Length: 131
Image (cartoon, rainbow, N blue to C red):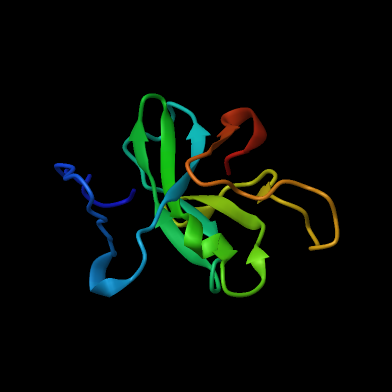
């Protein structure tokens, strides 16, 4: 989950319900990893198209920039179901060249796997060029 871990002592014959902040659902993420040791002191963002273009700031750890993205941004349980992730990486606000991020089909009728909860999708620096 994207917030504090839950700790609970189980009690016999009880059911416990959980809700996120403000009574909303708990949010489980998937992860995008941009594998590079370059630019560890810079600011890398992943710009994706959830509800318009959203910039998500990454954290550099273990040789990669890691972006945690709420699964609910790409799955509408009440309506259209899963949506593809499309985006790009930015270095200090400047778009990096090379192929954009794409997970899932370009059109709903095309075959292809969508993002999955808890999954990690990796892109290495050989697939992204720098200005």
